Length: 260
Image (cartoon, rainbow, N blue to C red; front, side, top):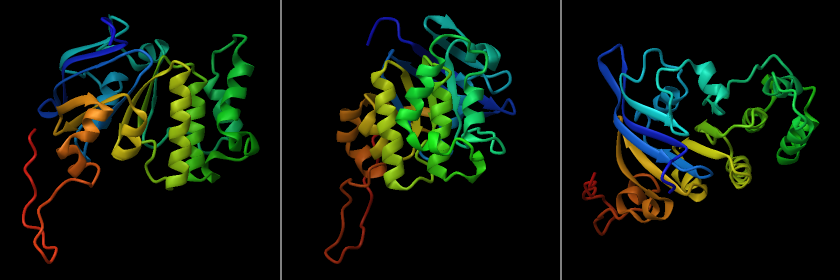
């Protein structure tokens, strides 16, 4: 990793109602151009982490620092953070469902007057040809997978330096999720940095270079995707291939205690 990461999160604490810790002392560094995944169970604080970075939680974080390209951004308004090139795609995809596919993509081009608009649209249509086919169709009539493609395509039209995705495979059929993740690989190879929150550890670790496990608002483990995949606790809890002792008839005797 370079000496100056693209995104550096240092000892961040985010609270709800000024008393309930959602994030407690979270520190993460993400290098430019890499895919970094954050894994963890429901309620671990994964979405809160993305919303904290994006400036969407008022008066948060309470403690710690968030630096983007060496510049401190915690406490900034979300509009100012977005102008830096940080694009957040929420779990619900944030589409205007009463608008057509084309109109949603046009919103991704809002304020752009550069010569690259046509090229970027061609890139999105090349990555997800179905969006060109459904250009006149209202977003609410798309399948879940098509809506995710539209949300991702619209985000790319903002030319993000950091693309933050919250559970992009949620509710998708395996074949469709594979298509979305192949697109993430393409986007990464073009130089876009991706911060990926997921519960599907297999998909996430298959595309990410590094990652972290978040539980109860704390980072309990961090490493390369290979290191996380080889970790016995990660394999058992998140990949479903851990070693759990069983009796001869298949009854589970105990679950190995995690080391974090």
